Amino acid sequence: MLSTLSGEAFPVERCGEFAANGESLEVFIPDIEKARIRKGRFLWERFRDFLPFDGFDAEISLGEGATPLIAAPASLKAYCSVESLSLKNETANPTWSFKDRGTLTCIAMSKAMNEDLAATVSTGNMGHSLAAYGAKAGMQVLVFVPEYTPAEKIAAMAIHGAEIFRVRTKDYAGMKKAVLALAEKQGLRVVSGNGPFRVEGYKLTAFEIFEQTRGRLPDYIAVPTSACGHIRGLFKGFVELQKAGLIGDLPKMIVVQAENCSPIVTAFRQKKREIIPFYKGYTVAEAISGGDPPGGNEILDKAYRFAWLAETVSEEEILASQAALARSGYFVEAAAATGSGAVKKLCAAGSIMPSDKVLLMLTGTGLKDAGTLKRHSLNVREITPQALEAEMRKIIYNAGERSGETIY
Image (cartoon, rainbow, N blue to C red; front, side, top):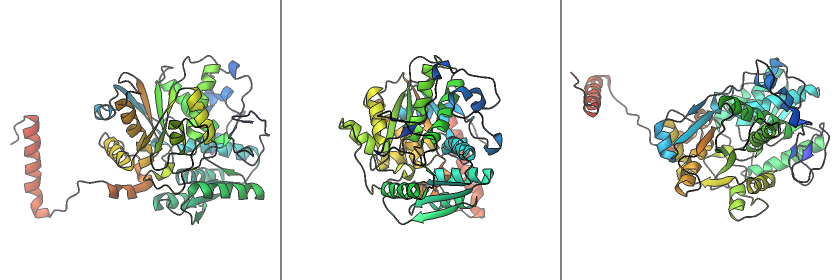
């Protein structure tokens, strides 16, 4: 493994997921220029030349991947002001978020190292994912979450038999650093959202997008960003495809963060080389509430070097985007809705042209945090059985008036 900025080498067996100076670690694939797509039923079989494993045991899989990549409906294109808008629906994964791809490779790593205990620190999605995959693999799972983690996510972890530690803290970034430091001291491997082997799993999404678009990649990919592993893995996948001569230009990433918790985007706007920590910044998009992400400086560096875009979304804009996606047929959690809100703002500013091809990563389902529904105006009415017929006739009549049809 190599540190992402200084290039320092580290052993694969290293317990800690970051260098001593806080840099992210990254798996180095030798001779990537010679990598080729092979035959195989599974994505990881076809792209095995790009992965650090000789092979996966299919028994650890829960059927992740093969998620839909489809054109956005006209209503959502109009909302974002983009003519060519597509959606990568990662809510179709087994635990309803993108985390499953990274968990697959983390469990594979643990099995290769003969570990029987898996642990993570999470705001919810990764904890749920590790609990499920750990159960399938017959491993004991520990999950450390902040106290504000939605009850739905905690219950989803616990039902798989994981041991959950709900830590009394309002500062997720500080809690995460403390847990990682303590675990490394105790020799416990805690896989985080930006760990090197998790990133290898997120590469699979890039390879899947390559297959689904037949190599005609989008110009921009909007990624809700917190721990940085997802956006790093996606881009690493595309870079490796380019090095292997399979694609030409790289798609540009859009770093998307909540305005109330935007350590990377705020630094990007100020042209700084180090992130600006946000401590105790509340956002309804709790899944991207990491205010001081380890490895964030590397994402800043990539944003400058590869001309990425970066945008924040206010609390009101997040809820409006969540509603717009829902009315287009996609009920996603607040964090997943930030991408459409960011693209809408970037189009209005002229940073994205209406003719550009844009892809939104829908990272997690709305059922992950049903409490957010209280923030929306929902059309639910109480009615008696006696009043149903009259109300139904009125609705049918009005629908006919709008369509120009005669309703008898």
